[in-house]
Amino acid sequence: METLKTFKYFSIVLLFLLLLFNGFFFFSNQTDAPTEAEANELESKISQLEENNEALEQQVEYQSKTEREARFDELESQTAAFMNTAFVHTTDNYAKQKEQAESIMSDQLMDRFFSAEMYGGGEVTTDIANEEYFIKNMDDAENAQVIVRLDHQIHYKETGVDETSPILMKVHFERQNGTWIAQRMEDISDTEGGFDAE
Image (cartoon, rainbow, N blue to C red; front, side, top):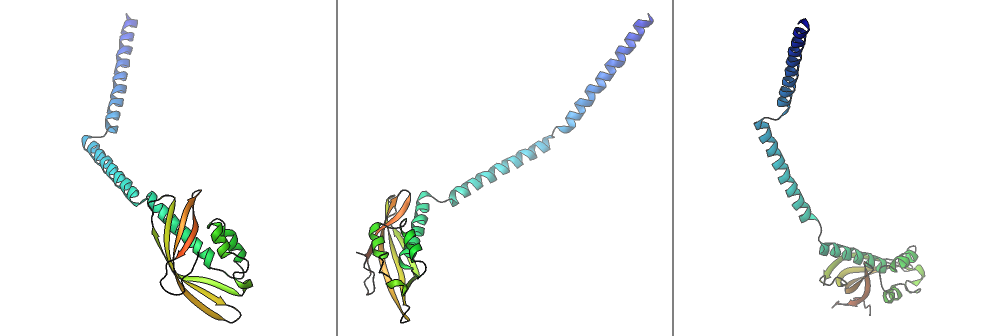
């Protein structure tokens, strides 16, 4: 009989402890769960972040270059490289310019600008100034023309004479292996001093 009382007593104590244990976890979980106001605030923040993200995506899309703009910039850069390689020469840079020209211009233009006797054995230096580039015909992905306006400056070292000639020309480019290559030039200047590239 005494054993039965002890068992009942022990069972009641154990049941009470289990109820306390469950109650503790129930209330601790309730305090961790967000209230309705907190849940609404979180939803509002998430909604705001989604709106900001969408606005940033549209801004990136708007500001990133289109394929046409990228080709335009590439062609303008290649035109500048071509003009500097073809028209800027000093005693020291002729061999380097000639090497660079191979990846910028056609063989015809190479022969025109890099003949052995062209710059008088280093007695003549040349430069360009005030260059402007006007790209046209960008609808064709493989061919384009660039109108170039610049001042071609020539310095004769022996006499100290400087000459400046205004140039207005059209340069025809063709895309080869992903690079714009200058193919030919034509003088479109109405004034004397235009460069005849034919």
